[in-house]
Image (tube, rainbow, N blue to C red; front, side):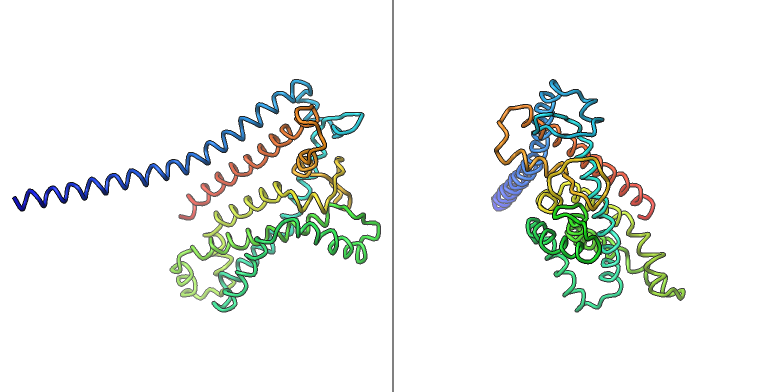
Length: 308
């Protein structure tokens, strides 16, 4: 009788645990499904509205025309000026952020004392929490006047170079933090083995740590570039709203995200051809960032196979 009661208690306990595990699994599946459904919804909306837009504007004109004036009387629907502005700022910001972020990560991971690391890393991460609109007005009221007074007397109030600087500063914490985490994940035994054969700290960093952490470092680069491509408020305020095909950082440009903001403010009639341009531009932007993420996954997987 006692044995039967013990078995019943054990059975009830196991059944309760099984139900709890099922509930937890269902909750996790629901959370994962939200991200999938959201992504699918975004793609469906972009494709649906974009298809409506391309019924009136040919894909060839959209991809090859070098004039973008859908909000003017003389309408042109070539997305190249927006793409060039986006790439100009993203590439320029990457040239600012990637070297500084990498050097910062090396310092934090390999050279800084625990006390210095405990001070510097939170400060870097605070930069990531500053609202982007603050960066935009910082570029407009400080960076642009500084560049005009020091280097470029003819620099206008809206220009790509100031947007490049602030977006570069904005993505430094992402590069630094992710690269630092990748370097600190390198096994200590690799470092100790290198020191044991007489390697200097610099040699350990350049020949052991950086190659072993390369997958994480490259991933941080690609994620930072994707972040720069998708930046909105800072470039809207700093770079202006002049869509023309140029790679001169001293000129005003308009990015794809800045154009979407401009049309979404409410002055353009909902459902009009001009309004539907934001879905075509959004689909182009989505394709670019998706491509960057696919490249990032392939690169990370390749280097992980090499070094793990």
